[in-house]
Length: 112
Image (cartoon, rainbow, N blue to C red; front, side, top):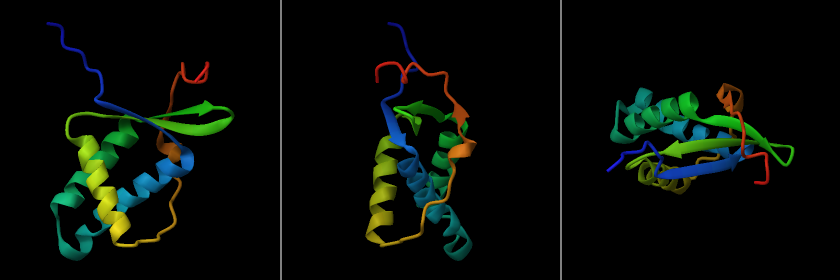
């Protein structure tokens, strides 16, 4: 049996949604200064670091997009953190994290 390093989930999102996701993760990271380290703040820190290090920017239909790959329990953690964030009603406007992504040599721009 051959093992592949194929991600469990591929997320392709527009720039605005990408920035909203990272802003939500920042909410949990910032909470450490008030309440100390929590499971959520540690998970958010790991996810943000991974997404910014390994996510890629690409253009599709003349719009900026991001590709994010998640493995194992990471998709469940993203859903959990976003649900908590939305339930708290935080309305912090998203910051622009898009310039931190590397440009992807894209197959996406071709027919996708």
